[in-house]
Length: 83
Image (cartoon, rainbow, N blue to C red; front, side, top):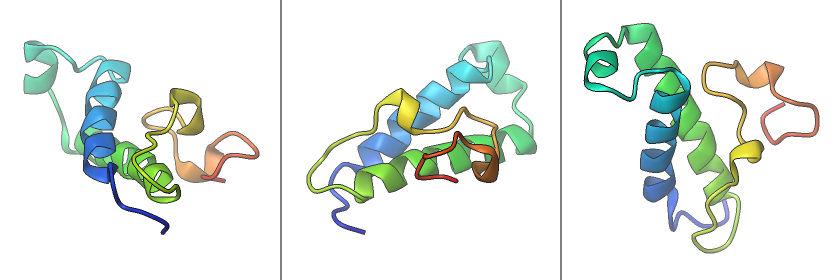
């Protein structure tokens, strides 16, 4: 861990991004969330926040730096921080 500045902002932004990627970014989608969806969202947001913590200052990750929401970290793209 280098710096935690921006980690919370990243976590929240990633939750919103993950909701969109899972097709749950609507009132009906939120109502239909299952516990497995919530786990995927938290894992995704945590992975994104970890990227921010690996850098000095509030440098949020670009989308391509975090594996798709719902993809296990061990199946992330080669060369990623999540392999």
